[in-house]
Length: 490
Ligand code: BES
Ligand code: MN
Ligand code: ZN
Image (cartoon, rainbow, N blue to C red):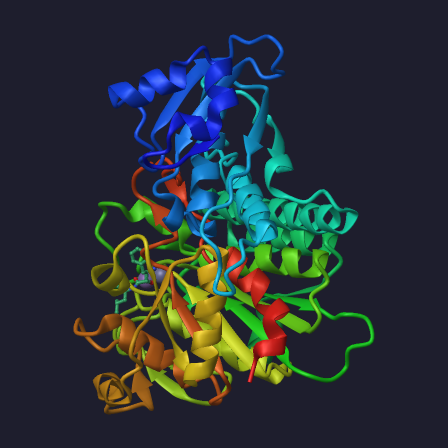
């Protein structure tokens, strides 16, 4: 049960009574203030109640309780119940702040709560052989009786919001599972195999191009990055084609799929290099979003493109000063082999256009610089034109992915100047995330394009009540919801 700041126990009088007045006592002593994620667990001594115990989770001031906080409170509550080995959990939905129209949209609270509870089920210890610390996740119920009108139409709406939230939570967890896999189990080939299965099971089209097919397309940037590894690259292509839809927009989702980024010849320092197993989190987000999009049968055509490779310093690896030719024909002087994400995405963005994309979104753990700018909680949002970037931002706001618009300052492109080729792949330290985005823009054919730099947000460095340490599943829900907003695209 979420508990608002300064809530008088009278607001939940029956519950207080069932605890023998324990809630009133905890409130009076200051143990229960309603601060977000604060928790209190106490028995229900009144045997007429079905539940044996109640778990109170702080939910902050009621006027600030929107779907974002509701999602996080649900995650925190679900995770706490799980560590206490609860077998069945009923989450009492409490709607808070009204939306812009002045209504409290109960369905969106139901969806957010289902997402949050599902996110709380994620467990990253998949290779522990004897993990006694964790039981199976509790069986879940969301209780809405007090705040809905009970009409069949409302019930139908809430049930569909519940199913949608559950699916989006599961897809987010699936992306987290993939991002959590180490480089030795999730090679490019293994990533493509697993992704193909995940997306095909949902009924979408899947094609995986091998090294030869990638070479035939002339993708010198992707091949150039792959040269340093003994593992061959792959290019995954997913297609959602709603029945009978042959015109209108084609949304392309493009995700960086570097299964391990050692930096290549411009090798990274040893400290924290293990983290670079998650350099395919953008690709995993695209895979998981494609599953959701196909399952929910989005109304427009959507394609997913995920180039996947290792970035390794093998004897045939690309070297600083080498020149690569992209499938589009543009030449790149590789100044730093660690700026590999933009290279493989350059060819992938071109391919998305070749397949008929009209609108582009890419997601990538692209630059350490974005963490300097925005920290570990907010992803960088770049792109053009502004209405398309705003569209992505609005969707992300509702989906619970925090994004902040960054300037795509065209004059900074000078930092990528090359004496010998069209441009280089690095622009130096200043504005490192902006020059990376400007590099990508060269491959967008000036279509509406948004770029999410998730290098800071894809992996949580420490456990918070609402997000466990490890892969976050960032961007999955934003990508999945975007095609459903096509009505408001310009
Ligand atoms: N995968 C990294 C970016 C990254 C860094 C993600 C830290 C997560 C945490 C990317 O390929 C990279 O190495 N970028 C370089 C670019 C530079 C060489 C221009 C960077 O950010 O240092
Ligand atoms: Mn790199
Ligand atoms: Zn990388």
